[in-house]
Image (cartoon, rainbow, N blue to C red; front, side, top):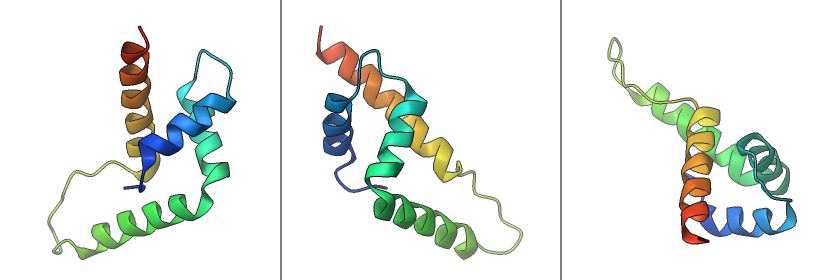
Length: 82
C-alpha cells in the first residue's frame, strides 16, 4: 500500500487534463513518487515469498492492484464532483 495515496492522486489529477485516464494517472504517479512505488513492489515481493511452500494466495501483481485502486479512486472522485 502506498501511504496517503488518495492525497497524492488528488494532487496529480489537478495537474492533468480531464478526462483522467487510469494509465496516464498510473504513469504520473510512478514518475512523481518512485520511492513509494519501489516500497510497494518490495512489500508485494516479501509477502509473496513469505507464504508456505505449496500454498497459493491469490494476490494481484503490484501494477494490477495500483491500477484497480486508481480506477476506484477515479469512480469515487467522479461521483463526488457531481
